[in-house]
Length: 475
Image (tube, rainbow, N blue to C red; front, side, top):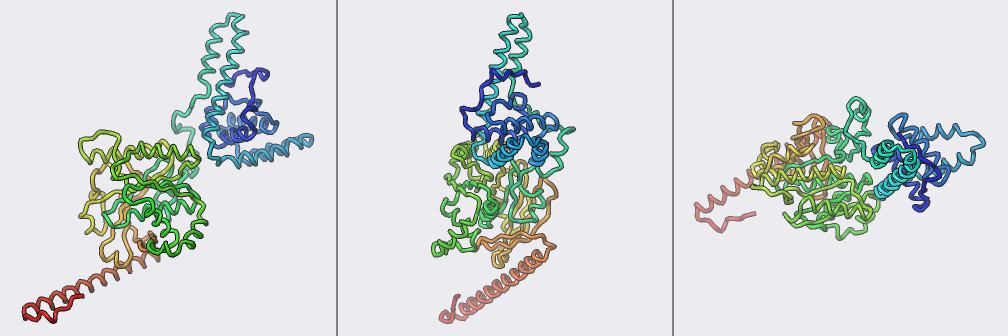
């Protein structure tokens, strides 16, 4: 229950300025957790303008009544209740609400939230001390202790976890997961729209199959959707990774980018998202290095929405281990822990065994290093491309693990890595059936090449047997 604050003893937020006060209200509307943490120590009279005081009063009333922040529709209904004599207040409230909602995406809300909470805590303690002076004269020592203890505990986080009986709405609405989709609708359908905060996706493939391209295709889709992506590369250089993004966005081969710089710039200018690429030498960086870099980005006003790691197998663990497979398990656990702490999704890739090159579908038993990668990841897919697939620009994507639903299915894929174009289809769709036909045609082309090679070998052997070395011609 809110303490009996005495308005005459209160400081205000005047020293912080009007913009800070607007953003403080944005924090209350932007985070249910923060509102739950602070509602009993926030006092409308901390704010200077009558419009801000009115808005804060409605936020506190609505939260106490309904346990959530009011929506714009709620504010509209409450504003309509104002009398004609309050027309000036009505106009200022409407104008201020526009500023409040405009600032819900500000980069410095975390800072504003911390400063505002500290201010409210200090005011709660100050009020308790001032009220205790009167109680001291009356000898109410126990009451003084209770009041001061309550003030010291004010503003503490109240989130004790998901309350099953009360939080059913958060389980059945898509608002529960703010997801970042992949470029492929059939994959998004499996993972309820995309990966959400703290979730880790992993792509398994043998060397040279295109897992790095798949990662960048996911990153490029996030950029198209206006997200900020940080891409950590432990193998390729920053500029080479940048060229791959250029190719995926434009369809221009990496080797031809230099001759089409203006065309690439024009298409990049149409992308709303931001991309940051950071290189670390192989086995030189741990999750702590990534966390430090992300914290630095956040401090500079660039908090990422998506993390790409190419790839986690090339990192080192913060824990000491007795074997490499044990260390790999630690790395994936630490990576997912970091994503959970930052509340952002991430994708990485992992190497499969060399024998998987001969498989039509790469299963979980072909993962290299540590099976713990499967345990830790939320969504795991594999990619396979045999020689015939490389000829026909096709491939297969197999769902190994899916924490969100069904797994075990295999999707045909168009994988034109020369132009960075990757599409994954439902095998029953018209596009999926076309890809499967191309796979069969590719197998036919490979058979023709092998037959021709065998024929050439036979001709060479015959010429050698006849001693006719001059007639030998090799393509």
